[in-house]
Image (cartoon, rainbow, N blue to C red; front, side, top):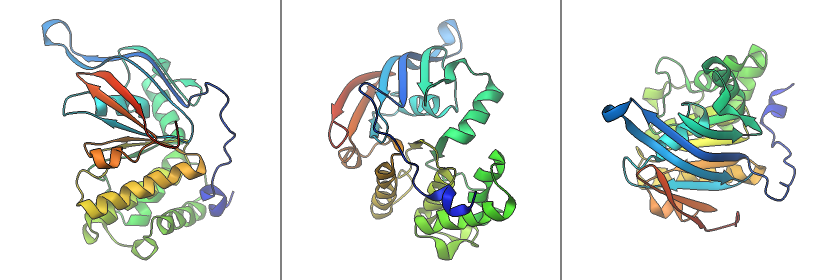
Length: 249
């Protein structure tokens, strides 16, 4: 497998009627027990269709980041069922979930989560290295091409400290997409950026849906949310409303 093949768009068949990439049913996440318990999400039912851009909004503590962590396989639900790409990930053990996540989900964080001692290209390569999908030379070439796609071909050998916040977040997007996952979960990816860089990052993520990638975008920015196919509003750990906005309707 060559690097270009790794990064070229994945052919995605038109979804059949009712088909979903993400299917959550009565999804609940509770930490602690008894009076000390804390509810993250409670009784969430949600479907996300292939190639859809879904924005999840809500005030702090509403459960939107917890929902994103569950969908991404970073966390595990206390109860309920969660199917992603046809797999019941709520039934997986921790090590199984980690392996599944590496090959099926790309995650973009608010605080970039780049390793400070690695260059941009090395940070992107790490996503392929952990999955052991390709050889060293192919990993390096695939990482370079992923950086080119986010407009950072000339920054490949810079350390994170030598880049702006917007550039670092672009590296994060390159790292999340280099494995060509079917699903991207972005948790407040514009929260640490100014408006111009935030909109540029959103445009990059939204553009991924044109190749069939599904993007779940967690945000406080209602202007960005308005550009999504659907907006899921959360309050107190529950889905308060689902609003069809764009192409996914």
